[in-house]
Length: 91
Image 1: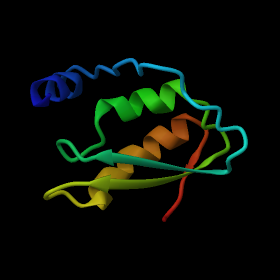
Image 2: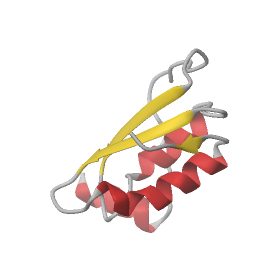
Image 3: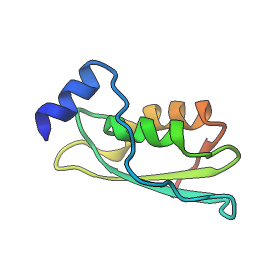
């Protein structure tokens, strides 16, 4: 799994999400959790922002990590949210 994640990061690969994504139309705020890999969210999170309609949503990020604080990933999450037409907000 580590080798796959590193290959995705190094080659900017956004893996396909398997299964149907939920309809988020009824929600104003969406919580997105992820493990922190190499000081950033895994590339699957990029895929989520590309494949899920998050326009106009408030995004709250939360993460797990043994060493890296959530704050180190927020610049990437802000960029993903902005590109998706969403806004990253504090928890």
